[in-house]
Each structure stands twice: as C-alpha cells, then as structure tokens.
Image (cartoon, rainbow, N blue to C red; front, side, top):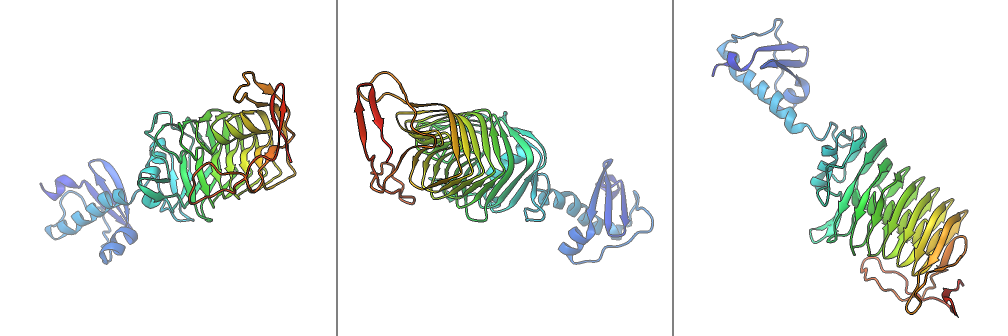
Length: 385
C-alpha cells in the first residue's frame, strides 16, 4: 500500500496538524502529541501536501498519522478531561457513568456530569457500583463527583448478595465529595445486606453537599438503610429526599439509616419509612450531630420509632418533625398494630449500656439497652428517658 492511498491531504498550520484521512478530518496538536512525545520540532509546509509526498517524508508522516489517530484515542477517557481538579473527567452518557465503576484506578479523580442521563438500560446487578469493601478487598471512592445540577434517572440495583449499595457503594476520606447531584426514581433492593442507600451506601469521612433524591424506593432487611445514604460518618448538608419509600431492618431512615458520629445539617426528608427497629423520618440511628433539619411522612417499626430519629444518643438542635403517622407494630403476642405518638423528634435515646447486636469490628457501637418499659393491655410502649 502506498502513502498516497493512506493519506488524502496533510496540512500543517502553525503548531497544528490536520489529516484528511479517508474523507475524515483529524486534528493533532503537535506541541502536545509530537514534540512532547518524540522530542522533535514539527516541519512546516507552506502548501498542503497532497497525494504524492516524497519518499523522504513517508516515514515521518506515518509516525505523525499514528500519533494523531491512535494516540488521541488512547488518551481519550470518558467524555474528556484529565481527572484533575481544574480539568475533571466529563460524563455525558450512561455508558460513561458506568465506566467509572469499571476502573478503580480513577476513583481518586475528579468527575463532572455534563448532561442528564438515564440508567434504565442497566438492570439487576449490571451497573458498576463505584467503590466497594468486600471479598475483593477495600477500594473506596476517594475523589470528587460534581453532579453539576444534572439529573441521573432510573438507577437500578437489585441484589441479595452484596452490601455497600448505592450509585457510590463506598466513599472514604475527608477530601472525597459528592455534590450537586439529582437522582430521580432509584430502585435499590439489597436483601439482608448492610450499608444501603440510593446515592451512597457508606460515607466514611467524606462530604455530600446539595444533593437530592426524588421518587423511587430503597429496600432491604439488613442494617443501615437510608433514602440518600445507608450509613454516614461524614458530613451531609443541604440535601433532601422527596416522595421516596424506604424499608429496612434495624436503623432505617428517610435520609440516612445511621448517622455514626457524622454531621447532618440543613437537610429534610419527605419519605415513607418502615423498619424493624430504630426507624426515623430523617435518620434511624443517631450518634452524631443533627441540626436545622426536619422530616415529614410516615414511620413504622416494631420498636424505636421517631418522627425525626428512631434512636438518639447525641445532639439534635433546631429540628422538627411533622410525621403523618408514627407506628409501633405488634411484637410477640400482640397481633394488632398500635398507633402511638412517641414525640416530635425521636423514639428513645440510647443509653451507653445498650447491648450491641450487629458485629462491626471496625465500627463498634456503644452498648446500651432500653431504660424502661410500660406494660399496658393494648401492648408494650417504650418510655423515653
């Protein structure tokens, strides 16, 4: 094959090379792709080089062609960008969003969502969750994801065999952040696994800012299930969930299943929450700081029900709850559901000696037990201290 049959026209202009290859124009920045890689100064042609280049130019032109055609393709990642803070990876499509979870080498990089995307083509467990802590090892997302006020719709993940479920399964580190993200109609089902949310399964030391979830459902039968985050020991601020259904086992909340020494501020929840123990309109279990928050909706559980927090053993300030209904379901011999008001904010505080049930070697809870019970003909009521 001759050179003329490969290249139609080559044009050099200043430091840019244009290749008209089979009718398609490909541009190459010589200062980046040629000088930086080969260490040579680019030639300059005052006139376009057409179909009969001299034999002396054949090899250099082929090298330039390879650099521009193949080098650019190898360098391209997602929708553009380099992953640096001032040049984040750009995400335009559902396929590019799914690619993030497929390459853990980039989980300490910066990403920016550039368009609304629909993830409905990913069903079951086909979506690549970003960040994990399981039999494969411990690999959290440590970077920054800027949702750019764009929407991600129809995120679906249905699995009974793994925990740490969410768009981001595991986010770790004080510099990690998820911000300005809109998640619409998620459908998350987790079986008996723990750390289950729609946006993040486990937030360990990072920050979630100005995110919201609208519609959809998050469900499971295990520990720490939340509408936005399963469990948080980081900071969540200016976030909310609306018109979402949350069902779980212990520690189930409209916004967060468990606030494990984290901070939640200026957030609200409008959700229907159902759990077995420690169910709250905003958070199921609180060991951290909650301020300037509120919740509405309905909350039900077998024990430990609160309009804002199911169990509280920490600080709540400037908050309120206006649940439509708080329900303690029947336990043991009692067959009918009791509908009782347990207070505006939380069910019962957790004293320091409550016995821990869940085994979490890295995240041990204080041991405690309920302070008092009141036996009545209609059932059993927990008394707040």
